[in-house]
Length: 177
Image 1 (cartoon, rainbow, N blue to C red):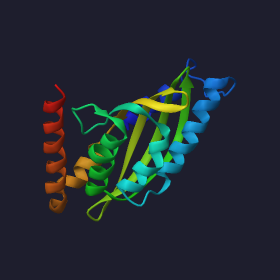
Image 2: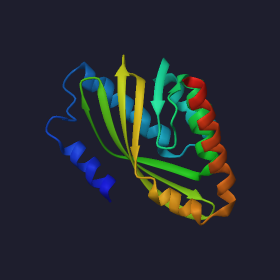
Image 3: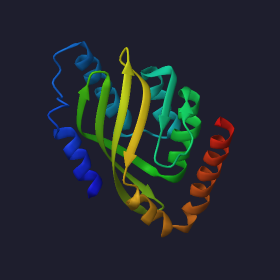
Image 4: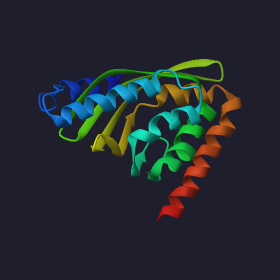
C-alpha cells in the first residue's frame, strides 16, 4: 500500500508530466509501449530478455530489489535478472498502470502478477529508466516485495530457488568490487 501511494505521488507530481510534446517525450512513449508489451505475458525469462534486448544500450546498467550487484549489459539482464525471476515465479504478467517522464528519465508504474508455487501474488513496481537515444541506459527498480516474500515463505518448494538467486547475486556483487 505504501508503494502504491509513493508511485501515485511520483506520477502525479507536476514536475513529471507525461505529455509527449518533444523528442524526449516521443522516445519515452515508444519505450513505455515496448516496456508494456514485454511484460504483458512473457513465456519465460529468455522471452523477456529477447524482447528487451533491442531496447537496451550495450552498456545498460540495472539494479533490482533482490540484488546488491549492479548488472551490466544484455547478457547480465538475461542471466542475473530474467532467468532467475522466472525460476522463482511462474505465470508472470505485468501491466503498466501509469508513466511519466522528465527529460531522458522515464518513471513506469507496473503491476506485476505471478505465482509462487500455487500462490498468486501481486507486486507493485516503479522503474526509473534513463534513456539514451530511446534505449535504456540505466534502470533502478523500486518495489514492495512483501507479498512475494510472504508467498515464498509459505511455499517451501521455492526456498532453494530464492536462496540460489541470492547466493549467485552475492557472488556477482563480490566479483564486481
